[in-house]
Length: 372
Image (cartoon, rainbow, N blue to C red; front, top):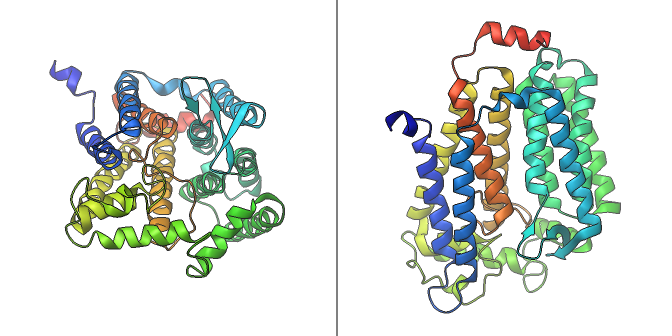
């Protein structure tokens, strides 16, 4: 029994479950319809079982090129399906309905990107100074980036770019190539602004630059989020007593603005506790990165940490008015099954890697370079 329990990282699992519980309590209406609470509870149970089950799998098969390429192609195919079968929600055609529930292919595509980049850089990071490796890895990321940006889902497109850039930096990019990357980024952003972004997305960015210019229109959500966060003060108004969220002054408080709703009810002290929990989550993920058997495990854990950190920073930033409003969820906390299942599965993969993790082994890495 003890050996069975040791397969799980209880620091990680406990922290994730507490953050998930914070989200459930925040989105619960307590009176009347608890639609979000009930559906998210079911998604949470399914995601938890999937995460625990993944901890028993030997994921060394993910190092195989055929497996990685297949995952990437499936991710691309899923994104292409949204253009034909998807339905529009919140201004983006990002969801595919199955009748019982909707799936957002963007979420698993992010993890698929991490896996293929981890595979690519694990055997080439010593040659990262060659521009060709930057371009090839950029092709993988750009393929997913452009399919997401055309939905249009600006927030997810930004996280995809952040994952690629972060993993390139971890692999050791040169300064001149880093300058080239930022130059290409400027060109891509310019093209997206003129030909890709929807008008409401341009309005959000304009409102970010001039937050008080249209508080009754495009800036309403951001302004209400800042008011909500500030109204929590030190100790908060109490669970279930958040007036801004419960009286619907704050829109989308179960999803995009759940951090603001949480801050109103729990206050500054509650936010500090939330940050501590996320700190533990990132500590455990980076622990796996340090103890990865080969560069693949190291880069996968690093990419996952970058993905979750990007989500957290962007969401909190837009809730406190220092970043544009985008549809980016708080990991493990915001309402939504696709991102929750994907995030917990990714953590399950990490725990599965724990079975063969150890201090970096020179022979294993040498074989990885040789492709054996």
